[in-house]
Length: 265
Ligand code: SAH
Image (tube, rainbow, N blue to C red):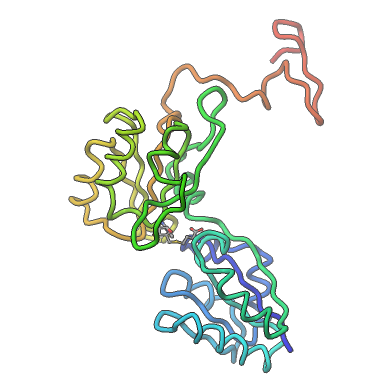
């Protein structure tokens, strides 16, 4: 019986898969990928003769059956997931039937679209004395939010919010953030198809106008929404510096010096 690897393919650019993920794909006997987002990585690195299938039209039960059947034939079977497999990827629903069948499972992390979106826009999600916290969440759609996780409650922390699966709900997002006390001028970043060669689009706006901007740009799917107090920090003149690089801060790898002394850079 083979082992089934759930591999994070990254957000779109095939080069953003990890080396470990790529090496496993190169030895895979069979690969099941999740829609067009990750097909390129599968095609590019898979060995000749590899059995490659798209799970787009499969139910969860069919996915499980496909993986189980392939595990009886091949030592390495890959399930390629978008971004990181631990985020909104139905990982456990797929793993449980494999556990029940006694099939070994491994997971390789991937670059989440939240990280790829911050990267392409040259944004940091944390800044000293601004926010040190990031919330990865979504707005309730067909999947309801558990108690205590409404956007109003989460937004009260005033930290960075990365909103998945929510681009059609910008109205609700604005309303929730208003209730949580955010001003209409709060910065919002929307990245459509982050890291996709030639298809990525970056939109900047405010809570008040981002919906119109997205509508005008025709963006209604595959988009990450970042909202938070650090957005645009690249252009701030007076940035509180991270203590990690502060010359007076001693840590494991470097002894700090008193500010104003000879060795203070
Ligand atoms: N596991 C994935 C998330 C899957 S849920 C990850 O870690 O990124 C699907 C949602 O992820 C989409 O609705 C969108 O909000 C976001 N997403 C996935 N790929 C994206 C990309 N390339 N650019 C922007 N958002 C993306």
